[in-house]
Length: 409
Ligand code: NIG
Ligand code: FE
Image (cartoon, rainbow, N blue to C red):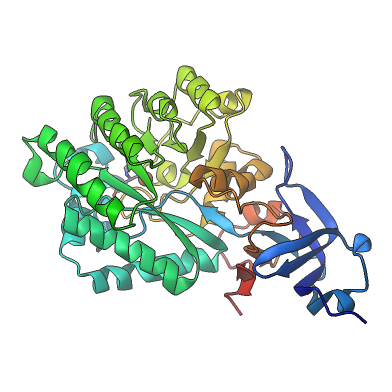
């Protein structure tokens, strides 16, 4: 008998591979082999080249359990100080998100809480949120800065984001969101703040290896198209990919702007126009939909799903985990909300938290189950993909593997 070739072989799995252009790329009665942190073989059990015990050191039968790629949350603001439960009450009593923001609450109140938190405190507060996402199947996580709005606090946020990745053993991709809100001390000096972000903060944080991508909030209560363009020019000089909070509360044509820069994604998009969609389709920019924010803000304007489909713009779904508009700690729940609130099919929603979310982060080595991909995967207490969107709450995770290593058992 020859030496086993693989570290681990899972048999009798229902594999949702997300390979191919549509649906879940399902393989029933499937087998998947993991070796050195990668997928080494995948296919129908009957097609295995030898008896399982000759092939792998560890062999396990899954009794038809569903296996998906590790979920990818491509838009979060998970690192922040304190919470905004008080605003939740204000909104329930009729105040709008914009009114609260203009009255000095909103993002700026989280900025105050984040600025006064030490790195250790910020880490301790953020860790349970990242753990909750991981416990529900997330193995790759994007985290934005944007609650510091001055160099030292933005740096602290990004350092905490990196540390969360290291300590949990998952991938964290960081986005610098210096143009998230105008800090109170710059109220009458917009241009100075934009210059500070572009000319000082961004280059300094990039030099420290803390920035994987650049984001902005292009909105009436955020930053203009021109200010956003100035930032994108700097990102381009530094060779960094861009993405944008666009068309969340109004249409500033932000999606077309981020597409012009070959952006990874435009996010939110309730007020997106057809011309913005066409620009995204041409540039290959992913539409990241955030049903948690739609739900929490009791938004009624739906993102233009039919047009996104018609123009074949890839759709991703994320939690937008943040203290103001989306205190959501389950990506699976976000996928379910995308079905119920946005009328996505479960296949679309699940592609949105796997293959298309990987694309939105520019991470092409994950998001599908295929030979050579990272062995980031989830074994579910479920047999069919639809169940992941259908069950509301509860715990469906049986095992999470990151780079071939089990992180749950
Ligand atoms: O994605 N829209 C801007 N940023 C966040 C909200 C941040 C906050 O309210 O704290 C969002 O919804
Ligand atoms: Fe956001």
